[in-house]
Length: 279
Image (cartoon, rainbow, N blue to C red; front, side, top):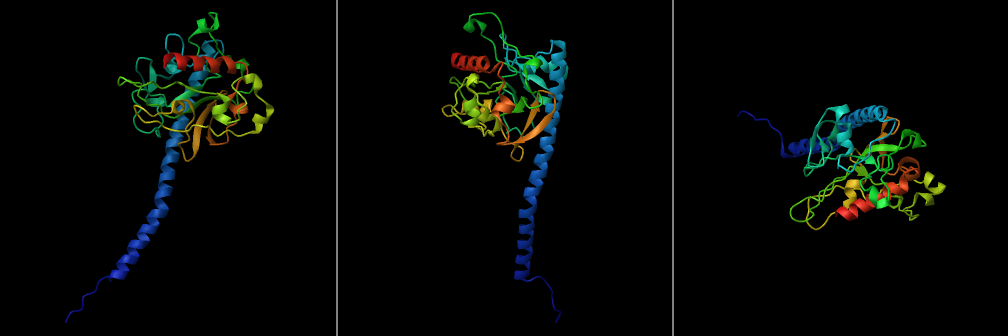
């Protein structure tokens, strides 16, 4: 009789086990490599945004754009003539697509865009001068930044997608909120005058680091105002001198990298006034 040769059941199980082990080892490596590629694209976006910022500064007497002005024009729209990439969408001209889009952004942006936010201490939100009893809008010049190479200008942030009732989104924000408590949990207070040298050596873990979903009753409004560490535990950031860098969570220091004494108090309180008034 002719003898047939084949694999035994045990041999097949051993081969399958080996393949499963190799897959378990390699898949995380592939995922990390893919995220690294996405991070490179995100860094490239921020580098181009940085060039646009520098060109804007040259045309406007070395003054940074505001996060949003009284006509609801955001810094995305102000930089669009220098970028001419992506699209402007929504009634408030939020940047979407092109250099405004991070490849690691989690799916739907609820029609708002706003993958990146400008540091409110550098690009103030000053839309209500009457609140302060004058007609002067706050702007920040490069000369007011003590250490441009250390101060964050733009960073990728979390997603805000809440329902404000009547099927309308409560709106994202174009900035990073620099309130000390949200960064350091130090409890020192909201006034920049109370900042101490102790904070200069304290790494800040943001109290809120999230991507909100479109939900009618539960949302964290801070999601869209704080950085998001999507790239293997790092977040890409653009600094005021134009260089870009990936920062790990906990390595950003509020006093050194976020706080600007010249504009902190007015910028933060005006943002709070905007939020409470609008919502």
